[in-house]
Length: 77
Image 1 (cartoon, rainbow, N blue to C red):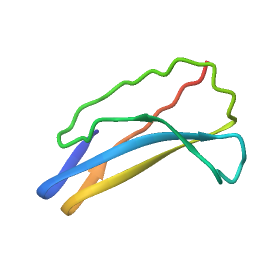
Image 2 (cartoon, rainbow, N blue to C red):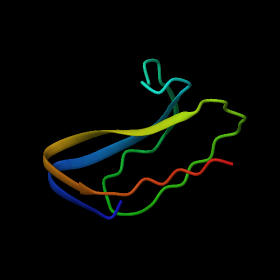
Image 3 (cartoon, rainbow, N blue to C red):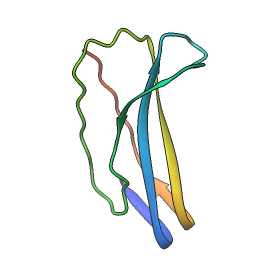
């Protein structure tokens, strides 16, 4: 999390999902980060193997007039 602004405790929760189909019709939640309320970083690891081909990050924002600047990086081995 690079920056957070807003009132009433703004937070963002990021989830990594995967699916075996390009349309992500039935995604599986793989990792969910702790709700971020201050700037900083988090690292999560997942044991595999996972044979899905497609991945995405989704996020949920809460608070009053929240504003976030964040980066998500995903590495597959």
